[in-house]
Length: 417
Image (tube, one colour):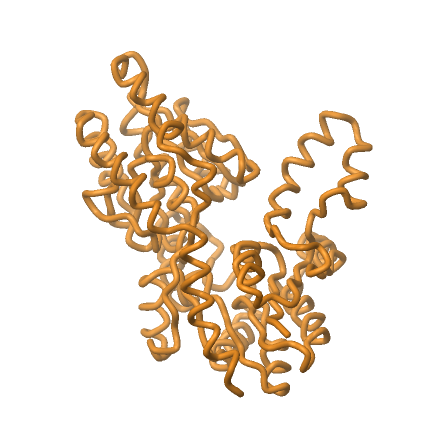
């Protein structure tokens, strides 16, 4: 017997699957789509024209991070496909239809042959109900701060940028249902897993007992990063610093929640003294993009996670002025690459202010400029922060993440709910 782990896309779930399997606790990992090595989808991809096949294969590799036996993986790919079409073409879309549908299918898989259920907020209600009926312990990851806090922050953000659409209620007809269902998911959990104190504080402020929540920050695969790889390029080039701009990188979907416009505004102020690379999909409103996008900005787009380290090695600093997160994986990767990290307290990162980088207020291009300027002008400070960042990342491996998680889950597995 073991745990049924379910996630409708990926998130951090492949890493959770890996650590549960390593501890002998995983019985089944359920997701919408897993890009199986040598499977039918991969064979079909490689039948395409070479350029198309290469690009699609690189993109799909993001769905192959679970390093577990493939007979432990169950998929519902048609749900994800149907959801994408539904959201694109429906006039009144239910933004959570796909997650709810996935959840219903997972609840049908659950049985007394499992020792527990582990799911993720927004896609676990029916499965949690079923697990409770079966007397199984129920674990839930809270991937981001409580939605009430998120709504308040983004309501202000949309107003700040003069946006007509209100993020707080993009689909008003399903907002009340969302509140009720998510509250029930949290109430059904025996243990809630959160990646940062920021997330925990938001839960406590909304009525969740702190002793119900496990703090378990994200991890990073240190095998993809070495101290030599992370810093040798900078050490060579620092003698020629005045001959090139300071390099800034940011990883994550481009949009209002990520603080992208604040970074673009800061880049405008810093001018040709900086180069900025942005990795991730682009959801910026066209009007604001035209207003703030400068010639020192390069949009790279999505990259497979194994290609991110090479991009980080290009940079001198990681800047991520997000409005709110859960525990940004990209910030851990930047630390592992030896980059000073400039981010906000709402990032949920493990960056120590003034040691591994800077924690700046949200919505402050001026604070971004000030932090970047200090790093540009003081190479000794940069080197101290770079060394500290590399060491800090070593405290947050996926092995440590797994040890913390397994230690917290195991007592529940021996008790009846």
